[in-house]
Image 1 (cartoon, rainbow, N blue to C red):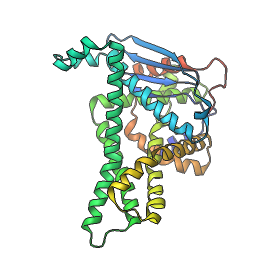
Image 2: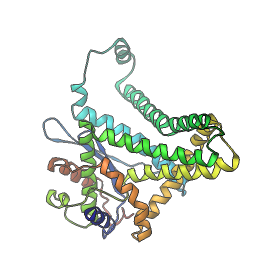
Image 3: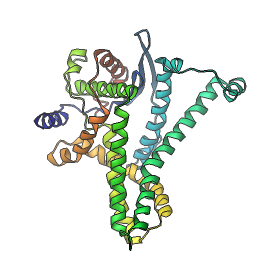
Image 4: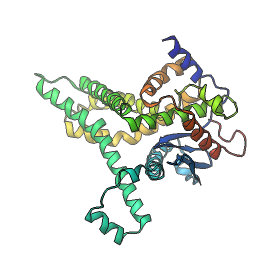
Length: 328
């Protein structure tokens, strides 16, 4: 317990806060700064494949508070999935899993260019990812709560339905992360997640980006996307109780639909919440950050030196030339 408190304190006491951040990939890391985005993947021969591109400027409309949260979430999902597919190809995972192509795959290869095929596969992957998320975190909790409400004589009440839906979302989310962390391949991805956090911390502590310095840093970061998702769940509980109860909405299908319609609102509010909490180090903000930091026990693990090297390379690729341009 004392060690956890010490780690939490270190997470909130860096002399500098950067907007640079990323995502763990298959044998690699996606890192994004204010101007550039880099994908660094460890190839089967031990060398690193580096892919760097400019971050396109966003329209002024998407810089408006709350709307920028929706834009950031959607683009992160798209770019993250794209980078994940790229890392699977570079790391050699696709070659290991190759099998005899079916008739449909052969037809696609003959009639569709490789670039268009990649776009199609990416779109399908994103849709499947969104579909699975909706199934697990919106439809399943609402369906289960609706079933409980029908079984209990007289129902459980609208207030209780909102709270129970939120509790189920949180439980499913934690269980999902826990089960993922027990899988060998996913565990390695989470080790790269730890490498990304440690590298960011080293930079924020104004230390030279070396393997030795990065290795000493904590792996729990207060501005991680895991915290974002956890706050999304907490906010959905509040909105469910505050909106569905006064309107007396108990129909399961209508509740599911309204949950979907509220998603952009939740994304926007959560983004602004995380920006504020991430920029302040007071006791109140530390309490608000605590659940997200605890969740990182499932999504980050200690990396080896080779993983740390990937994290250092990825961060160096995206650091802006103008000092301070990446300030949080």
